[in-house]
Image (cartoon, rainbow, N blue to C red):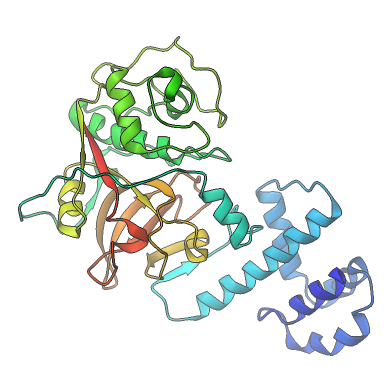
Length: 348
């Protein structure tokens, strides 16, 4: 029974006082609402946390089953987060908008993007590069955005690298339009991407090249759904991409590129520690099956752990205000989360 399952899971949760365990046999046949009432007398903190999460992210439930299913997943995730944070790791996990998802739900959310490998790379000579880089310090990174339920990470990664090089060359930080790419970068309009059903950054660079630039976010705002391609906005001057560069699969090449400008790249983002990342340097195994486009805006070291500084497009409620530090170094085959496999940047 659902009531029994929730009760058993919750009683055994490591954050709950073990003295409650003696109530388990007598309560197991009671309805969940009765148990919640009794439980609130003893300790209301975990349920208050769940209700606070529901209120914070404005979670809507379609049915009683949906409510119980989400509660069950939230409890499991709360348990996982708590246990992980008790271990000696260089990163911490925390709740966010994905706390009501299990592994299957989250993988389905992430894997809307169709990504594959490019075959043309640039190789850098070994040159001196800074020990650390953060393009936010040079006013070349716009605030963190949120793609919502649309599988448009590829568009956000594309605009992020375009915003970076545009700011570096013009001195003006402008937010470019992801919605224009979602609506217009498709086969009908000379592109190769698929709106909210996924895409590739290199394809988007190509479309911007053929389109003679891109409109601003202000003139073509994001709505998170694929709509009719609009032609009422004007492309920003100097936003036309002349070419784009694919980076060789090694840390030296990627760091050299990052020292010049923010870089678009693809990673595998469907693992649990990535899902609940909150701070520090993520060093856990996270795979190399590329399914998510993001932006790397820097690199550095923290408490002896080298990292890449990554801007995501899941809003500021995820990660460290929307950012994540991915482990960097030879110990990560193909880079942490596959970061070395597919990286590129535009040339204006």
